[in-house]
Length: 120
Image 1 (cartoon, one colour):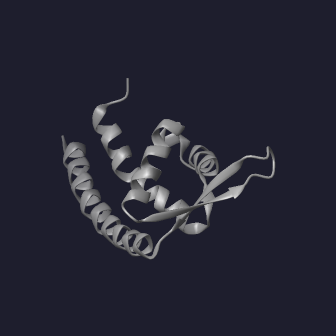
Image 2: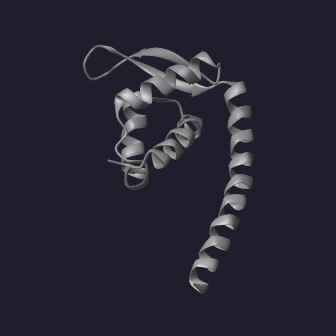
């Protein structure tokens, strides 16, 4: 079983990752899951519908993403396409700035710890 601390890190960053993917282009849920599993599977683990869709709904409720329904070419059904709202774009820019500062800070602590460990 995966460490619960690792799971918390993944959960905390997944919303920002979804905003990044949606910010690149208008996209739909299955495409997001496919890209997550192709790009980040090694670190993030296997993305599932039960993980991604609730986050998409939360992002929509928060006004960060909007969706539109369009006919699906393949099966005659419909697809829900997600795109960032203006608020979503602003929030993503803020999250990216924070992430850059955050990782520099955390990396500093990790490097200090590793240097201390090497001396032992």
